[in-house]
Image (cartoon, rainbow, N blue to C red; front, side, top):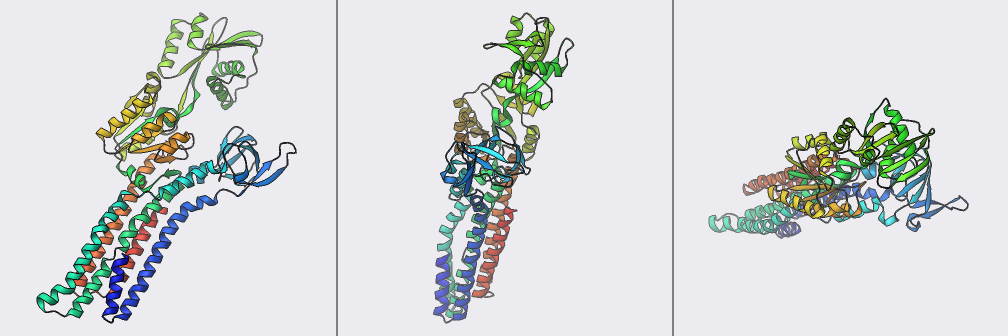
Length: 559
């Protein structure tokens, strides 16, 4: 680009066209300034992330309960920080005291504030709502979710997209071809037809200016950086232009189950009251027996009781039955809670109860039975809850032309089948070890040109790396999965997947529009130059105009 312009300006000076040379120089410098501004604007949209995190944190002295301000870089992991209403969260941490709602849009892309209570995780750079929080720092300043986003986005800008690579390859041949064509225009008509040397030399200079690929060169980087910034705003972290274009071509997507299609923690899915007992009675007795337990199934029972506002007390003389359950006294009467196996050992199972229990287990539920010495009071089916809207996401992906959707899980056949049926997945594979997940993804790549893998755990990392594009669940996902993946959904929102496919196609569409428009303008003005209908300043004005238009078109992606 610089070479073509330099030759054109020197040539104009050589034939005494000083005004033309000055005009070309000025307009080209203006075009470069516009290019710098446009790329800078797109990058500033991402660079604004660096301003999200506050410089200081209010660290609580555990002895005096007073706070002192420290630079966030000096706050150690494990320190207690106090966050007032309206303050930005200085570091990632766990809420120890207080409740509030926090605006996490900058990190996860969630449009609504998220409620935060004791035990919940908070992210640096998010904005506290109306409550005061005391938070235990869990990550140093350089390792927060925000720091990871900033680092990965910085790395992303260095990874060139296929379209950028194509433009580079094109320019490698385009510039010498246009130089040769300009030389031919300058000398062949005078030599072969006796035409004026001055006229055709001037036309050759016009051709060089027209050939300058300003608009073509700028069209792709602006679009790519704007596309990356727009995705980051929406809570989708894409680690480079090469990964920005990949979702447009997805034809198959493989999903992990636990933590991806499901929440990754047990939830009570069904309660059946038996022998005259209501669901609330069954849940209350189960909670009274489990109130001091830290077992995941017990926590699911207690969570359901709180959700339904079912009051419960605390059982007395509780005895743990390792691997089976527990028993204790409620209102002076002995009750027990436990697995299907414990129900059999108690001799409380009848053929009717056995059939009901088997149906719940076949549906992928872990069975929790509650009973006393006389009978079974009821059954609770506990399973990992499916994320809301998952089936709708799959339907939307199919409408977008992604025909192959498959679940890959290490869980048992019954649980996998239940999740597949609930979400409308026709293809699933259960009881897979990590190497078998890798083999499954590799098999999909043999059948389809572009394959995505969506996961959240350490065991998903090899499969994420095997896919055309690995997509990690960013909020609940492990560091290994996020580092391995090419794209991270920072809010764990599966509805971002159809958005990502559409966004990628939109970016590609804008890039193709820009490339086609740039080349079309070149072709039109080359024809005008050959006919003697274009001047140097007209050529550079047309090139600058084309540059302005492709910049504006690319920056539309920021919206």
